[in-house]
Image (cartoon, rainbow, N blue to C red):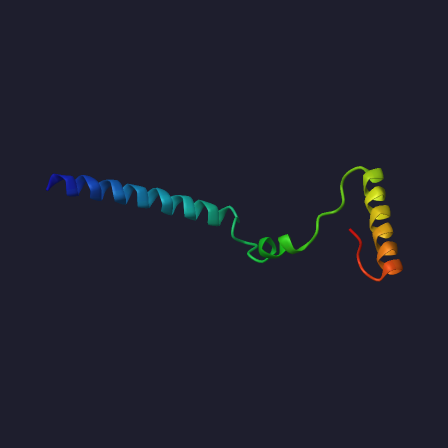
Length: 76
């Protein structure tokens, strides 16, 4: 029977720790903006990297489009 009292004390103390953490996070402003994080993944990141690499990708895309127009379908 004494185990129940120990478990109750442990569970109440864990609940208090989580409650204090929740109150601290709310007061620090962590939940102020609920809209932006859900939409952030929909926006593309800016292209960061080597400019020459991006130009090579653009040329490759243009060439594949030209091949598609010449033959009427995509080529492998």
